[in-house]
Amino acid sequence: DDHKDKPFYLFLSQIEPHQPFVAPDGYRERYTGGWVPPDLATFKGETHQHLGDYYGMVKRLDEALGRIQDALKSLDLTRKTIVLFTSDHGEHFGTRNAEHKRSCHESSIRVPTAIQGPGFDSGGNIRQLVSTVDLPATLLDAAGIAVPEHMQGHSILPLLKGETDKWPEEVFIQISESQVGRAIRTDRWKYSVVAPGKNGYRESGSDNYVEEFLYDLEADPYELSNLIGCGHLREIAAEMRERLIRRMIETGESKPAIAQAPDRMPENSHGVSWEKWQAWSQE
Image (cartoon, rainbow, N blue to C red; front, side, top):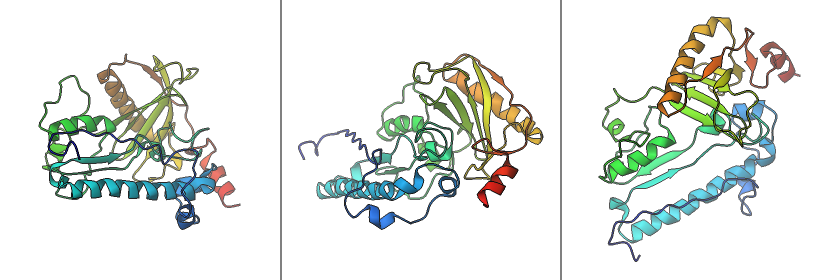
């Protein structure tokens, strides 16, 4: 109320939905037993133990966002205030590694992002790949503030006008703590590498990596079959490797050496041959 007549910036960070997963009374019950994404249903983890609480916490957070919207409306600020809702990571419930995030998979890296306000009132979805590093530049641009040349990321405002020619065709992913890893995602392919022997809590990068994952997101959107090392996709892996190295250099890292994965048949993401996995999953 005290700032409604002056420009203001408010950053509100909610811990939920986050471990420990304990939804408010009555919220878990609404979602327990509901739809489970195929990747979370396929791989062993803690999905069924926590998903009801997780969805319930998301619902409660959505209601809290609604109260902010109501406050803006009551102060007659809706038409001149930009509201951005996003998250810093997803949740895979231990299906991809020993924790709940910090992997290259969609369940870890794909996050909700919605923007409303001046310049963002046309509705619809952006189909291009957008990274969280693009959001600060977007907010500055929308507020009429020049984006510093040294700032990484790009404003998405040109995308809203249909100006897509210069937009990057991939997003770059850095993975810490669970591993020292790097990945790149295009519309169709996901390619990820890991630095063997490096501690993700103490070391931020490496000069040497090995290939770990390759996914065809068009044929396998839930990343159930790891294609790294498959002979017929060597050219795809080589192209993705060069694109990843280029993006690493652009962010200030030294040019790394990336060792190719050995030849093998397609695997599921837990390292079991796909044939064995299919047999196991049907038992």
